[in-house]
Length: 284
Image 1: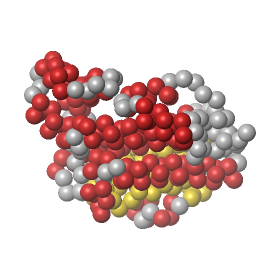
Image 2 (image 1 turned 45 degrees about the vertical axis):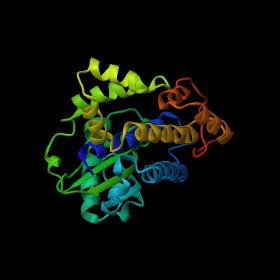
Image 3 (image 1 turned 180 degrees about the vertical axis):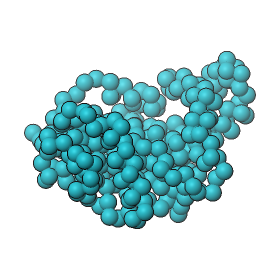
């Protein structure tokens, strides 16, 4: 898998976790029982998303499936001194990897979270811990309890690779990618992404049609039309996980709407935290 495609997968994981963390939990995260319940919902959400990414072959993940060494959700709790006091499914990870993950989490807490008020609940993510012949990502949620314990739910993705561009900075290609994203979003804001409109946009950005098609495959792992279908699939999954819409309403919405941009509009209006999901911890 190319670094650019891994970055796209990492971005998708982060997007869903941010969505997950913005809906306040309907329960007491200071309770040990609810921490387990909360982790089970986090595990269900991230595992469902990752299986969906594999199913639709998003960013060529399916082609790299035999190279994926970890796609593991886990939970760890650290005390006020950043010492590990509890864990859920963390022991599934090899000891040397656990030590690196724990050190990264401890440092992140000391740098950014140690002095925050109690009952802080937000998302957290890390870039690759060790980029030698691998690409990896950690993304999840963090909660600071009333007795200043830090509970961190994380999804760990690690893919082996032999790519030389691992030595390059993660953002080395973003300037060109952002140009292509601008063109792509102009195309999908309306449901008529025809060749005439595309050629006009490419001319404005001094790009040839051939270069644009090659670069779309380079950045997103697929053709423009297939990438748009994948985006619509992920938006429908997002509606299923995070919106109050029934499955029938979501199905009708996706049948009517050809553009993933249009589906995004369903997340712009405020919603009650008590009625928000199929896979979430609703009460009442």
